[in-house]
Length: 248
Image 1 (spheres, rainbow, N blue to C red):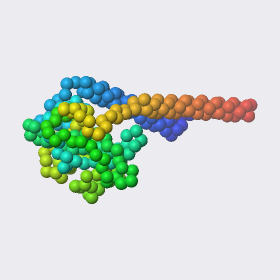
Image 2 (cartoon, rainbow, N blue to C red):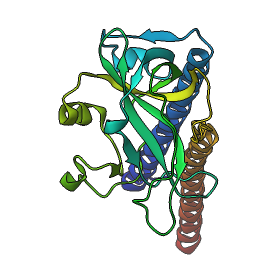
Image 3 (cartoon, one colour):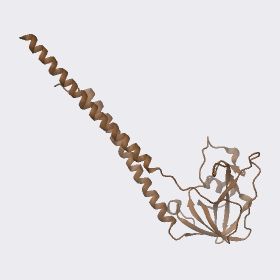
């Protein structure tokens, strides 16, 4: 049987690509599982103290943290398009002036939005004295879909997203490179904010599903190649038999 080089190379290429993509999805699933385990471990660990010394984001992200200081409500930012239970609202983010020096942004919680006028902010309480804030260190106060940078958002209270580094430059304060997603504070009091934070959705099952799909495509390419090769061989044998019969 003659082996046709181009079809064989094409099938081998398809198999190589789909197998590689399957391994890539498997590796993504493993990375997500490791990150999930890392987050769960850090959330149950003793909180890290946040003070004047800058803490690197890579070393503190997803850790429980504790910070003592005074809120700065005059620098509050309201992050728009943050729904809760299908209700539109804001995340309330404001700096905390740390007792030992330095500053850190705190995502204090969710606040419902006025349906008729989004610029009308619902009332909530901010402690005037020193408080102790506990929460989870995050790279930002979550990000909503944004079509692009909007310079008009600078110095505005209501924004779509908030970059920690850019905001530190804007207000001229040495912020820590992360945001505390607040879970509690001392003294405890009702402030009108909701802190029912959504859990990260890693969707590992989807990656494993894609892995199986890619490997299934590789197997299908192999089966198709074997079938096509067998059919071609059958035709060659049949053609050879006909030629032999005609030559008798």
